[in-house]
Length: 449
Image 1 (cartoon, rainbow, N blue to C red):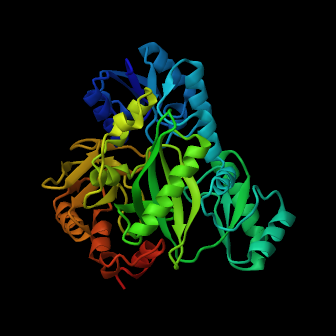
Image 2 (cartoon, rainbow, N blue to C red):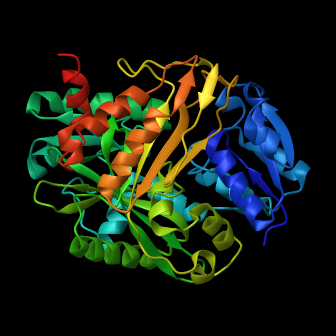
């Protein structure tokens, strides 16, 4: 096992990794920006090192600073959490060159999955169903027109080396194609440093389904069921649950087996998430893979009773999968609400000082947070304040418990999305499990009318 682990992140995920390390008896090193000097991950880690000014480009994304901190603290492993450097193949390579274990997939695998067009081709070759689309990057207007003629309209143009809705454009008519192509390329260049885009047929009103996987360094691979992630705003997830109310047992077994075989073929190891779109007929199509732990991993942990972060660490240390996770069996249903520091009506960020903070409790309730009364939510980073998770014997009980937990969650001094989550859970279509990726758009557009 590792001697000491540096946590290259902040907020609730830094605390989550820190907790896993403590359970494993591994000392921890926190890194922090000047804006996070009083953050809880700094207080609770065994050591803490400041790596720069508030801007993430000068601190949490500054590879030389992070590696310098790791060398000063004499760590032998780094856990990147999610976001920041978690899917940066160059960072993983620098870790290797510095004889520090990167707790995640190999640099080659991160690079493959980060190039969305390449990942699509690799997974198709490995047996996963993919949406009809371009054969790799679409280089120019002429190629874009040719692909559109082949796969038909409507279609989506997507950044080849990014995600989260940036560098993405929908095209419904021929007149929209060329302007959308150039806009997507410009956004991709600005967001990801590469203008490369690819094209796919548009699936109308899809559901977003993802499978959690774990693989060790010995060729063993397993999936831990699926998560429903269709409740999104501008391609950013708001609420997730497991299992999906739209996936039956036969589909879960079939797609899960295909996912495991595909990732075994390409030699994937550590944690990852394989993402699909589900069409109105129930077909699932691979869209991308996230080569890291996900924000929404707690719903899988609650249902499967598996500690995914501890598993990541143990797998990176060379343990076999069966020892890293032990036996598991799905039980019940879990829902996660992302509580963000945003106006629930306009979604404008609401940074500032938290004047009162009270988290709910009770059977089946989990809160992952780095917030506390008198803490400051800085304007420099993601607006996530807490992840509220409710687990029940079935979906109805999970929803009921989430209702109570939201009512008992107190955050004052800043605005949060708690009222939005209350509206979502009260909607008959959500309760019935009848929704898609446009559900939140419709809910917010009709609210108050």
